[in-house]
Length: 468
Image (cartoon, rainbow, N blue to C red; front, side, top):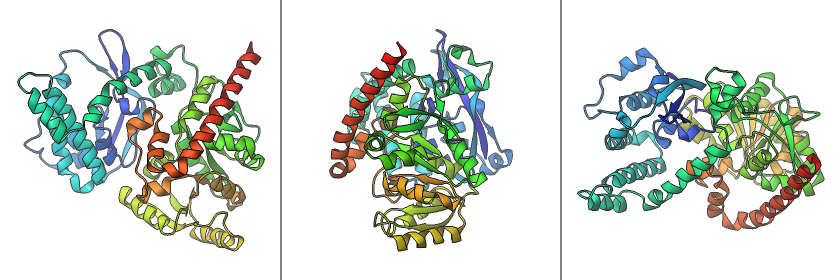
């Protein structure tokens, strides 16, 4: 339905910044982006977009109340029924100055965003509707509170329809973004550096993404770097996605494990798990502590959360045949239903719950026979670490890509809630998960996160001492 690209804003003082701070350090969304356009507001710059003319004409006349956000309306109209593709490199330079129309019409933008939410309310999850409605009312309240005449009306709106917590968090979120921009290169700089685009003048001193990583002696896919007890793949999210796509196309009988503080420290103590991770086709940097560790060692690492990898692949590759393995009784069916709701036309060829782990031998043979009969493109394994890693290692002879997705089944079946984008960006997903499952996760985090911090501190000091 539409193709869009990345825009880079430039300011009067010479600064440059991504137009879309939501995806400043990750790939732009593709596929079914309808819900993302609400969750992240309108992240598409109109100057970068190409729209299908026949679909625009079919959309008909603009609503009479639409004054400042016709582009947002068109993107939503097309994304509701069609997929989108994204050009990750910048295709537009966007000038920002004090007299710009966007700054002057902020109130109208928020009001029209609320009307657009109402227009498509029935097509959106209730939790997303509530969250975004509160956000837009909070922004309107903050605008009103800047004026003496409307101050009390703004306070009333904030308390009745907005979110005081969200308003109080804004300065901290802006400060965190400012600090992050000083410490990490944005995605578009990394992408331009790799592609050699002429717009990469601001990134001349940047190191290529893979500079410091060393390839695994048995791994043909992506280079790796050692973090405590695991050799972790150093790659961007897009490279991980494309690697999985290559595995599917080649019907490569390998598996993708994920590395977080828990699995990395566990691999130090469990020789069998260490060997399983060594033989994985890809070991993604699934947790932010692992990403931070890789960056401290000099690698330009990017987080590849396997839950997000699952959603990105469902959107990007509609022709894949999916098999779901793991979870409680009934969960694979619930996940399949949610997949069909989010990605109309997606093909789920089978599923099997694994309430008992390790899986009994008789059940294991039946599961393998069921997978072979379904002829999937790949198998998503949601058993949690380390059970899913050991199972994938034993089942790699299936000749199919196997991907460990941990707690994804709980998320898509509604047992747990999705982590907000701001918490993900700040590396606080662990805290959000802890608030939902304190009994299961409190001991694990206290023990293994502490071991990870102490163990990596020793590794970092050893690396520094060796280099000097």
